[in-house]
Amino acid sequence: MARGWESKSVEAQQAEAGEKTSAPRSRLSPEEAANRRKREVLRLSRQRITQQLASVQNPHHRKMLEDALAELDRKLSQ
Image (cartoon, rainbow, N blue to C red; front, side, top):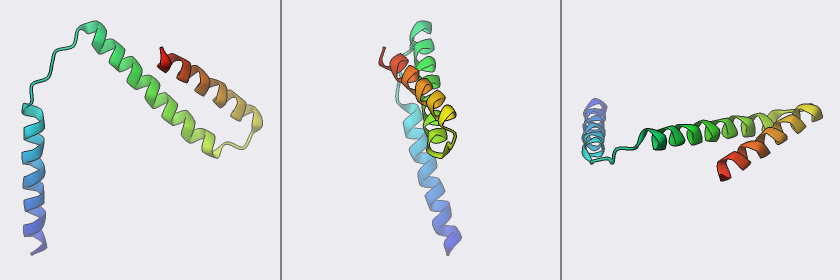
C-alpha cells in the first residue's frame, strides 16, 4: 500500500514540474543574466558568511567576517 501512495506522489510531483517548465519565460539579455548570476553569488556568499559567524570563536576572525558581511550587504544594495 505504501508503494502505491508513493508512486502517486511522484506522479503528482512530475506533473507539477512539467507544468512549471511549460510556462513561457522571458529571455534575458546577456547583461541581465550576468547581473542575476552576480547577485546570486553575492547572496550565497552572504549566506555562507552568516553561517560561519554563528560558530566563530576568535574575535579577530569574527571581525573579518563582519566586515565581509558588511561589504556584501553594500554590494547587494546597489
